[in-house]
Length: 338
Image 1 (cartoon, rainbow, N blue to C red):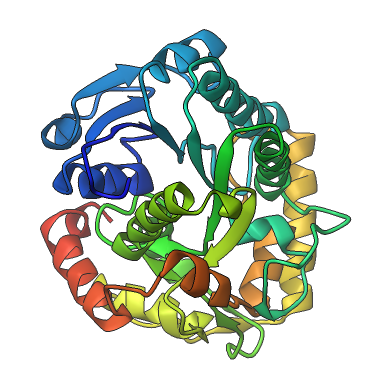
Image 2 (cartoon, rainbow, N blue to C red):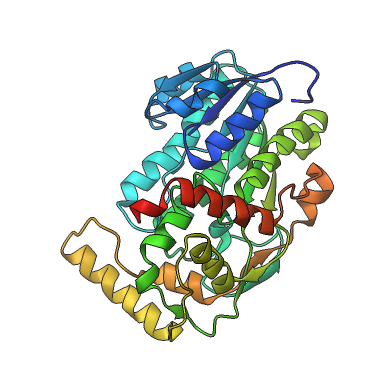
């Protein structure tokens, strides 16, 4: 990945928000990119040498996709805060194991794995936390629990020959966002500030997240001693969570959130709604969960010194410029659908 010659690269979840951005960046620098996703994405065509359709939980399909590749970027995952544990385990844990085995059987030397800071979130404030923070004793949602399990499989693989780096981008946003920003815009009228609104969080603009993945691959090739390392990545400038939410609403032409709710009441509501939805087997996501209540009321920002030092990571797009691009994209694409 050093730029000396084009590399044959596989991006799992290549049609997703982050996977697409990574594929585009790799293609622009001359690498030959293959995407592995559940469906075909026409917008990926200019940036890929081919698209392989398949499920990340299909061991044979993943193994075949890894053939002839020199590096794998594993971004495919089941996100979200609500759903069947088996589905999260199948996608996030079994899927990651399949990628690791696919690399091993095809002698793929490098794996860059996308994780999440939520794997270390224990429900309390996390201010300037670094990579030494342990996993919590209790997880409040299936996503962080299964992503933590996936991390452990990748770390174990790094001890037996596969060269790996794990990245933990926090709250990715920007054009083509199909999760965070659209959810905020859709729920604008129902949003409430949880707590005093002063809790600080990290975010990361999509181009910066993709760029960090490329840097990780380059650094891993140059210095194999980095294998097995984990890195937080972000804009490098914590912001009040509700200021950022209001920035997203402003980009969507919507008024800011002004009404608030006590954190304890939000947590109790989330616990009750989880019980109710579970009791009646309601598949849709509850308006509030215990995990979301805690996330919205606490600070969670991280020290990215290690990523700067080892990967040479510095954000290439400022938050201000990212918000300008986001507003432009919303006006062109999703505003009329909210």
